[in-house]
Image 1 (cartoon, rainbow, N blue to C red):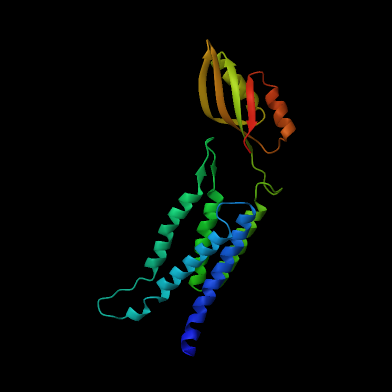
Image 2 (cartoon, helix red, strand yellow):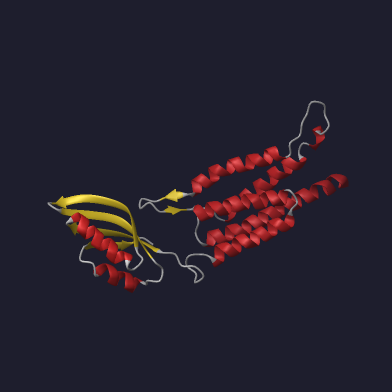
Length: 227
């Protein structure tokens, strides 16, 4: 009995350590109200560590049996295959065309790697990677001073003389380093066109600056900040 416990304890320790690391990453995600939170990351790290243990140690009893080959990487490779399902469920494409959930999906991917590292007994790599993930998620979050993302907004322009007016708008916005994409044109009358598009505004401009820029364009019919 004591021999059995002594054999199993290292495996249990690896699973618990994987759960701890997954939980630390998950707490940071949950505090930011992401779809994959603490429980999800713990389960992912636990499953990865468990399958890594099975892959590495679960078939030792058939080692050396006639006609049996043992590839310890096969089960571990299956973990990566299953990860695609999780990642696909976390990434969301909004109506405006912007994509969300990529960072969380990437975090899940790394969490799987951490769980696998713990299952393989590579504690140092797993712990350091956990620290790096949490640090990156925290320091480079868009709401912190370390990094500022461009403001995404919807704009509707009413243009007369389509080509010349469009060139005027793009030139004017370009002078502020504001880019436009996702164009949707609609005819509103003779030689009158409505242009709906998304604009990306550099982070150096505050709300007052943005309002002043767009209200200064006579072609602007409406304007709405997405984020």
